[in-house]
Length: 178
Image (tube, rainbow, N blue to C red):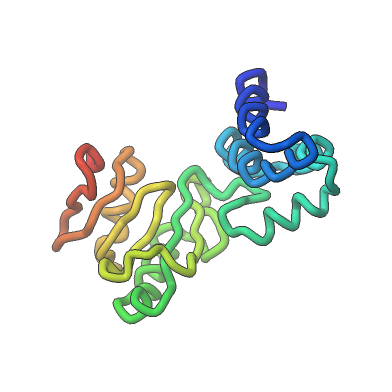
């Protein structure tokens, strides 16, 4: 569907399973499609259903159950703001409100430019660094409403995960903040 290299990647993943169980690779295949095009389009849903001998409804059921899969393009960068108890206590809702204001969109939507998609996440497992957000695959810790625009600009410029300290970003790992 997405070229020879993509097909080989799927075949390698599928080779881990017995022939009669290769549909166990569906989650990995959905991730591969999403990595390729940013979401799982309808033609890919039908293609995967045929490939694994299941219905399109079964594939859609997996996509709709797991929050990490998107049927529509969610934005170039996906922001997951944590909303569990620790993050809420430390101001997660205020951070989300600042994100919505800065981006000009609501939770579940993309900003008008298609650069950012905004989502809630139940837990990001960083309670001691609350409130936090996962942007793409990078963690941002100790967020405040006042530092939201700094973080968004950082992401636009290609920066990686960071912790907010005062008014600046401190890298979570070497080379993360560019």
